[in-house]
Image: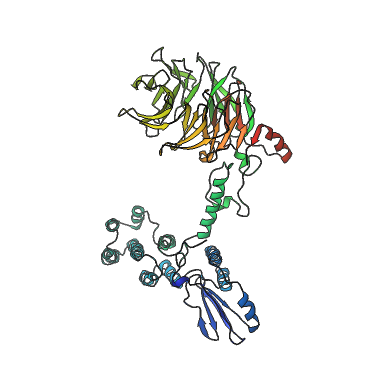
Length: 608
């Protein structure tokens, strides 16, 4: 790892000094203070005071002179690796091993001045630490850094005096040392207020400071190091940081990774590259690509499915005029019928769970002027709403407060209502195809018949264009963080838009999308995956960053209208189809290779 061009001054003039004299040399090589290396040759000292990264090689007998001269000189990257290993071993308390490593390599863990500075900070010898800064000044690239470092030192000194009850000494530091720096006066005003703290616990609480001791001084050193070139003092825990970055990068590039991100290195092996597959590997067990259950209770086309926000239930809506609520078993992830909600004369083409999952709203197709608001725990119909028989209420979205919802349709209705179906606001002339409420509680996103998504603010009655497509937007959904929108576009397929930058991010390939309304979804841990139904009877899954599908799930025999990924269980997904079934997709079972090959028949691999 290069050191970003830092520390290329006097402290990093890299040289290997071979000490051999007239075929005979006696040398004593010793390391002290984390690799500060000195070498004596016939009583004369060499190597002392050399800068960071300096390599010193010495011979112990004349017969070894030739071999030492032929010894390869360490490159900058090799010395960096040695220093990183040394720092890691030092953190584990293997000090003798560090000394031996530095001795044999001829490298230095950190500059002598940095070692002295570190020791003085950890021992709380603030005056000596302040004097050390003068030695470090010549090794630094920014003269202003000295003032900042001095401020941090004096702040720790001030707080430790206060904690010890030495108010006069603390006042002297504040007035005589911190204030004359003329740096960060706002912080000095805050620090002066701590003089009023009555006891040490009060001080620690108000400052959010750990108090005098090893922990707070280590944190101070971490801050101080940021002002020093890495050639002088390595950043804290640098090797762990690099390893963590490598693991995160491999996970980020893995198309099938579907487990919660863990920054700890303890959960991974560093001996192999991170690889996931859909079947029978560490993270493949979390990828839903096998049919684990087929729900056949509906007796006609199933138009919609949606998991509840807490992931414990699935609601499915059908042309057969019913909504079925399914309970998800928390252990086996099997679904069983909880209750059936009947009486939707036109069929059910859209469903929306309230934020707390207490209520479920059902909408019908284009010629339906009614919507139903059900109490899910009791199974009772709370509200059946219809403003006019001429209306078309085909889409609905809940306000984040759970007390209001918006609904509309392609005949120009766009209403905001309360839980009793009372009309609170309306927007005239908007032919709504699909709706979504933004997290601010004020803005509603609506796709319309003009091939666009606009944002409507019901409070100040303003609207603005956000997305413009060239073909009809049949449906859309928004990511949890509100940044991305996933659109099913007629004859085009699935498009990903950045709502903040208002740009088209990606067009996903493979899916067959005509003028049927098909609903796609985000899914998996961190919503890294995208799934969509298709008119070719398949479910397609993409990694969010990849335009080509990573899986095609087969099994349905007619158009797949809707896909829903469980928001809590990343390995569970459901799909609804015109074939009258709901398929529940789960991870691959733990089988041997031959059995997995057999199961792959219903899950085509799209890997290149």
